[in-house]
Image 1 (cartoon, rainbow, N blue to C red):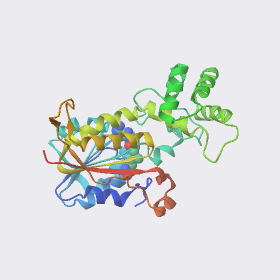
Image 2: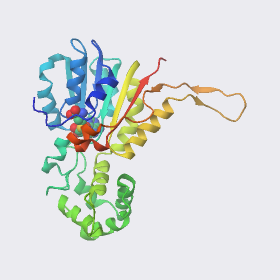
Image 3: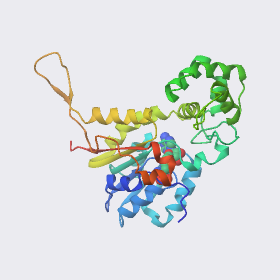
Image 4: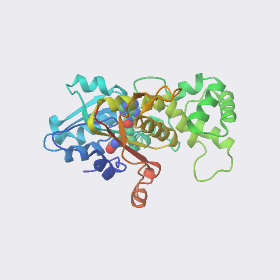
Length: 307
Ligand SMILES: C[S@@+](CC[C@H](N)C(=O)[O-])C[C@H]1O[C@@H](n2cnc3c(N)ncnc32)[C@H](O)[C@@H]1O
């Protein structure tokens, strides 16, 4: 089958989730359904998969890819941070494995009118769900200079955030990807192969979709949705996301001791997770060669402990 999106760390995900029949699996970011298909193959004949995406185009494609699995698949247009409500809504009380493959898909990046790409002239949109919320243009044209600078610094780690914010204010209103990219080019007249607008595009996309808050909010919910022994696998594509996953896994895998004032320590909350890989799993040289967009992927896996 022709796959428009090549699933990143595909074998590693199947190995991490260890899908079995008749297990229940959640793919919080179904995209084109590449990982989901592998999970459904591995948990045949009776395993089921619940898939989420905010993007109706992704869901339509996943529906097509996963049609051969019939009733074993349920797809919903919702954010993965609502996984508990949605899971209960279809009558599941827990899941045996959960995958989050964060960020945007190649399909979204390669569709110019979605406004994610620096390379294509398009309206600045960047919403995962193109029917809800503020577009990137609305955000850029209404935020204050300080808010813009803060956004570029925090979500893009952009060293010249203040200067770029000031130039945006002077150039407003901005409507297209190219207008924004041009501002970054003026701030970095001589630049390397990496486009100088890369960091501010990342920052805007994160802000438009509230991405970091959604991951932070979803991780504890994902753990509480898991059956003991079930696994949570998260692929992130930049250090801001990976830090959230790493810190959450670290704190959830330790007993929380409280209060530390006396010699007698009381265990307030037991560890709820076992971290499977201390260091993140990264793509092989071979995978990066075949799919250069995989190069910054980091996979972290944890297992829910018995209560
Ligand atoms: C990297 S792609 C996933 C690719 C997928 N694993 C595959 O094999 O094709 C990420 C997907 O997550 C979706 N997404 C991003 N944030 C989301 C959220 N909060 N809830 C649900 N889906 C989200 C995006 O629309 C995109 O389709």
